[in-house]
Image 1 (cartoon, rainbow, N blue to C red):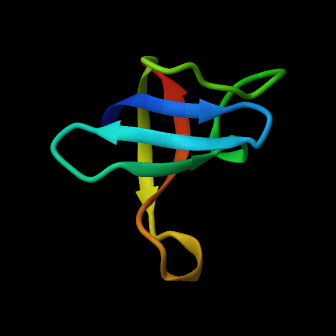
Image 2 (cartoon, one colour):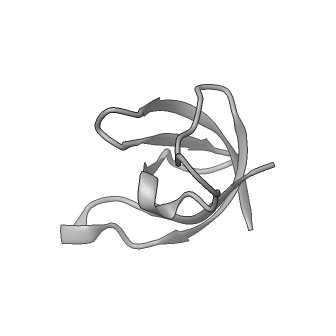
Length: 68
């Protein structure tokens, strides 16, 4: 599992970015958040996540995101 901090997350649009420890920022979509109920993140949240290739050849994308 990778660790990082939520850089920003727009709950209305359902996506944001995680500042990864020792690596590039990672895109996160609300569907990747492992949570019951409303799936959202707050700037500054510590998270753990896995990385997969982004869609359409874009940068890395987070999956299985959990608050640490």
